[in-house]
Length: 202
Ligand SMILES: Cc1cc2nc3c(=O)[nH]c(=O)nc-3n(C[C@H](O)[C@H](O)[C@H](O)COP(=O)(O)O)c2cc1C
Image (cartoon, rainbow, N blue to C red; front, side, top):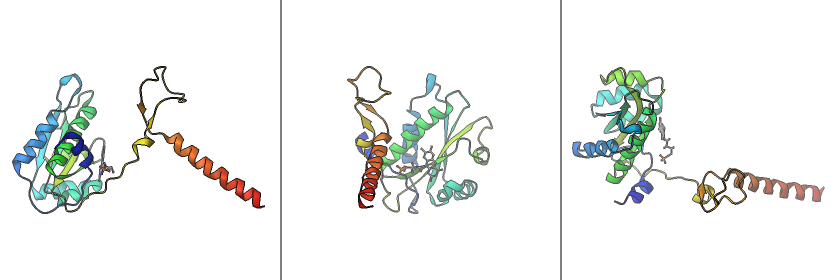
């Protein structure tokens, strides 16, 4: 699959079929994750593949935002040495892993790990060294149903910079950002029209 197709196909999947995921596929996901960029090329990450049902149940019982982990075929825990950019590095690896999962047709969901009350406990459960930081937990399995894919339109994220106060001098570039002002102006226009009609009637 082309990268753009995998990016377009990726969405969080939280409901899975009971079928297991082959070890070779899981290794492929870790291979994709370890190819992520890392600051100063330190590659600080560790990947822990969890397939044991009791462990999946135990993780889901202490991570309230990942209760569905218990029904996943497995999860991959992304941990990192406590280096300066551990979070950025770990997140880059996590996204690579998610895209590789989408490429294989697997369902996956990123579950928060960093700074969560359960971060240390999850790592301890897995027998990981105490010095590691938990970055994310990725639940995995064959999707039970198609996920929703919702995104704001690209046109809402872009502006050519003309008339934007924050724009630097170079106007030959197109900058992408969340163009909140468009929405605010649209709301203001509708409100002004409603007020005009109200005043005209009264
Ligand atoms: C840093 C991060 C933490 C997340 N943590 C959770 C989580 O703990 N539980 C969960 O169900 N989804 C979690 N998600 C998934 C988001 O809810 C999801 O990406 C978002 O709703 C957009 O939907 P999509 O992934 O289908 O595009 C997390 C995503 C990110 C990037």
